[in-house]
Amino acid sequence: MSEDDMPPLPDAVALEDGAGGLPMVRVHHSRGEAVISLQGGQVLSWVPSGHEPVLWTSPLARFGEGQAIRGGVPICFPWFGAGREEPEMTPSHGFARIAPFRLVEAREDSGAVVVRLDLGGDDVATAPGRDRWQHDFVLSVTVTVGETLRIEVAVTNRSDRVISYEQALHAYLAVGDVREVTVTGLDGAPYVDKTTRPWSARDQHGDVRIERETDRVYGTRSPVTVRDGAMARRIHVARESSADAVVWNPWESAPDDVGEHWPGFLCVEAANVLHDGVVLAPGESHTMASTYAVERD
Ligand SMILES: O=P(O)(O)OC[C@H]1O[C@@H](O)[C@H](O)[C@@H](O)[C@@H]1O
Image 1 (tube, rainbow, N blue to C red):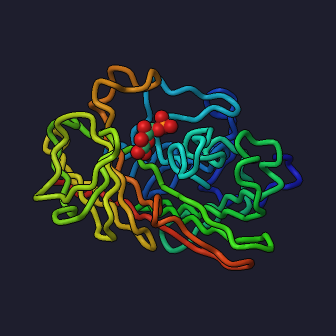
Image 2 (image 1 turned 45 degrees about the vertical axis):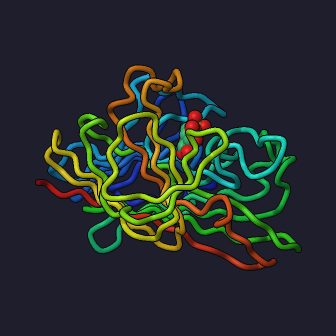
Image 3 (image 1 turned 180 degrees about the vertical axis):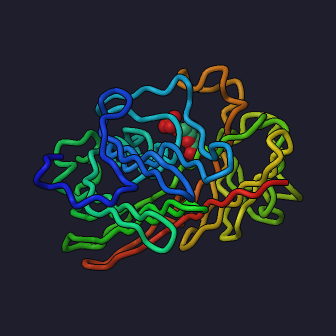
């Protein structure tokens, strides 16, 4: 984005060239630090004061224009994975996560820093996959960095017809060893297991342990906690207007930008996907949010 389009930035916020020359917003605040990539509107790092980094970014992540960055909190929109239509939609998880967002606001606000990034129909005119979802829209991401991290995604239908979309905040949570964590909050929830062919419908009994490739869409609005004995901490993921929680770790079938590092993260994603996709009449808006908090054992 050009200098002329830049909003005024408080002292705690800087816009810099990051890895791969990608523009990144750096937040340095006494309560927490963060890095947010304008490409994808993606929080890449959040370190609340006195804690280890809460988000994981792959040591093998690729940073380049138009490339999905493996880590942090990618924004999936307007479809999730391969989407709900035939043939499969590409790019995986929609065009937003590789699109150039605009920095529209940065301010300090009661002990936190608030950064807003926008993406509109004009910003994705030539984006791959745009031909499969052509509606006009505005997607606003508001990131609040402090003792906790909150990411809010507001979508407005700017077209003259009803639109439908899937969405997720695809958070990669850093863990000591995914094989040793316990995930609570999902007991009793129905889920779609995406590792079977065809996918299967199941119910969760008790806490979740990661013992193999895990790719599940849980139909629940309850908060989820990742208990990580190795790092002696708990990461709490609360969600608003999110009907689904996706839990993903690829185990040994990890993509090549994860490789042998797969034990280092667990994705817990605030989502509205499959039959929980959002439907908006012309002019309507919908806001989904997720708040991350960390607590020592
Ligand atoms: O490799 P990608 O496109 O980042 O997707 C990673 C994973 O993301 C998860 O959210 C999906 O549930 C998985 O099915 C998918 O494999």
